[in-house]
Length: 391
Image 1 (cartoon, rainbow, N blue to C red):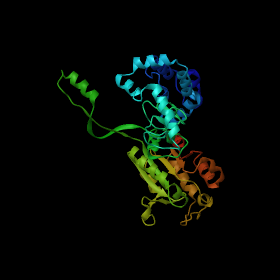
Image 2 (image 1 turned 60 degrees about the vertical axis):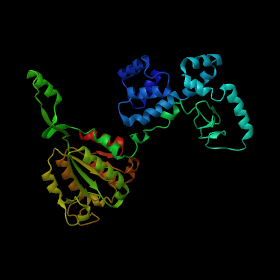
Image 3 (image 1 turned 120 degrees about the vertical axis):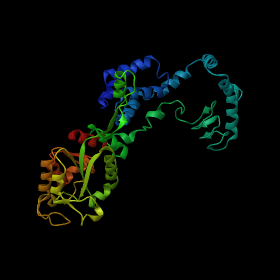
Image 4 (image 1 turned 90 degrees about the horizontal axis):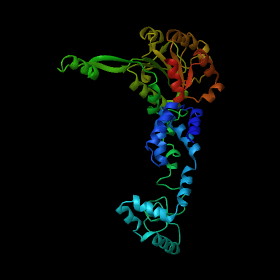
């Protein structure tokens, strides 16, 4: 059963290794998961999934492979002899738990009380602690809780069925095909890391302190080091206004995540396509602009250039002088794009529009060609592919 599950995970893109499968088998051998399907689910996920963005995919594969296992367990319990169950209860239940089971006079009294209430009750009841209904604490009914209750009208057990875990799919928002949230963006941006220690030496270097203290005959010799920062330098160019108004939320989340992940982050705004100038403050974009060539001269080739925009515009805005909808541009946007790309070898374009729509927008095709196909959708998967391209 586990071998087939292992290959299903590999076919589904999770790619667990043989070592991880052996770790799972060893944990099961040592009884880590016990006899609970819920515990096994968490154990298997811990052993076999290395990336939390794959949790949703794991849940779906787990549900497909182990579907019905909880029902099979219930059938097994139904076939067990009553005297065996009573013997096991006496063996494993505490005095308090046995007292609860007998709180209604034992199993026979429980069944008799059920028959009486069925005869008395005239309609559906929800909540409460007496009538047969839902979401209450009565010993009879569904979707509630009572330690010695009888389930009526409820599909599946609620207090041990594993379906409540993986079918709920708590991590579906982490699937790599969905749009981003700030947390998801941070996870993806962490692919682009190059740590260096910068600034004042204000953090304890424990290993060096131990080594130097030992070499100093036990006399404490404290060693400090600068804090580690992501040394990657990013130049972020964000399309603003017009059709990009539909993507303000996700762009704000990307901007917020990028500022927290990269110490060396510079940003500028443009509209539709980059021309001879860009700006930092949208409220003063007509008065305070930065020449594009000044950006090139100020920020070296070691910067990673990231454009963010939907690439949706008239093709004239890219390929013709005067094509800009806001001003007269002496040179076409494609020429300014090429100048930036000639200077910054590591460059990508992140597009918040779904990738399935790109083929229907001529301007998107033009910009993809200028970017040498380095355009990626603004999803978890697309952002991870983009970070890999920049490395």
